[in-house]
Length: 424
Image (cartoon, rainbow, N blue to C red; front, side, top):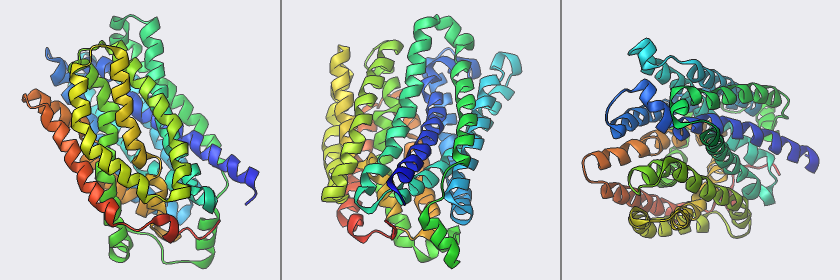
């Protein structure tokens, strides 16, 4: 494929990924404001726990989305899978934007919120596998790590965009208005952007890998085939994801709440600290991806596992005592730089483990299972530890899971040399 056409396809796929993840992360970014509208309580931690439970349910349904849309992307094409996922995300975001509050609809209000989050969970479950596969297959052999790292660049960009929208609304609206109705605005923006992405994705070029599989009428894709014929690869994806995804959500989405509830920063200061650290984190992803093209994927994963296991507890302990924004920023950034060894290359590592006929499902389903158990529950588990007076137990939990993933990193093959992606 010509370089210009390949770059255009990668940019097009990445843009859609950004909007998908913006829609996903807006929920977390605005939880502090909309939780009282759906979960009335005199205890702010109880409200956040209820909202975090709905956040976790979105993750629990992600394996179903990964399974259904992973098979769909393997059978109908990566382009078709990407288009379907953004459609579901659009519906979920618009539903939240117009959802009634508890005062208006009683117990039906949190149920509507739950339904919308289920739609978004199905969408993201399929998005990860389809976009990781698309970007990895579109990238050339010598730049696969670099270009596939843009999945997390756009993922983080989506999270940053959500935080930037929050910062803007915090600056132009009083807190009372944000809690009353302003939190609806970002969900409306997300729904509108998803409609635009739907048309962008309809114009994407299909990958050569899928075209070759389609031409040769290969074995096909299903959950049975995945775990029957590729069990080692599937369970390896679960193992290498568990610690990485837990660390990422602990250091990013939960960190905003931690800075408010534990460190004592204002909601505005916590948002600014998180956004600044995530911005630097985003910029470093392509560098780490490029490095993996030179020295391999395993060294980066092992570096994350080692530094994460050693550094998580001290970083959280220091953040407890952080008394100024700059110190907190440096500590949060240190944690995110550590997890870069996982985030920048996890998509390409997973894609390189599977043959093309089952690649989208192989990337998506085991990853979604690990995310449902470890990533989506990170906030809830952290808040539960805090609610029972054992907050530091969460630090040890994250540390232990990173250490378990490190064991998998040490034993896995170097996928840069053994890649199942044959096309260049």
